[in-house]
Length: 91
Image (tube, helix red, strand yellow):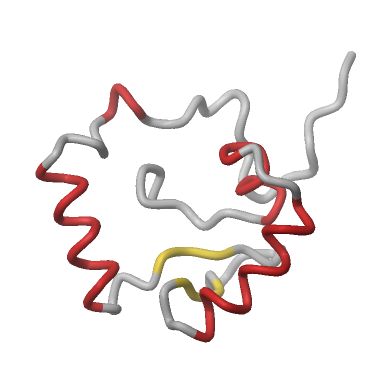
């Protein structure tokens, strides 16, 4: 989430992290209750984004930026990730 700065669905989080979707679903409410993430507004699907109003998240983002971990070379492959669309099918 920090690297891409776009709302991500459970599918998107699964695609980038490699974690099982059930594990992601289980932990999203915990992260939301801790105010580390929030539901993205205006998305047609349930999507999540970092809560940049949270002091801890703001500090982490500053640290990642200072360490050059959020640069464009490390950005997502736009062809393989479509945040609000169904998974790509073969063929």
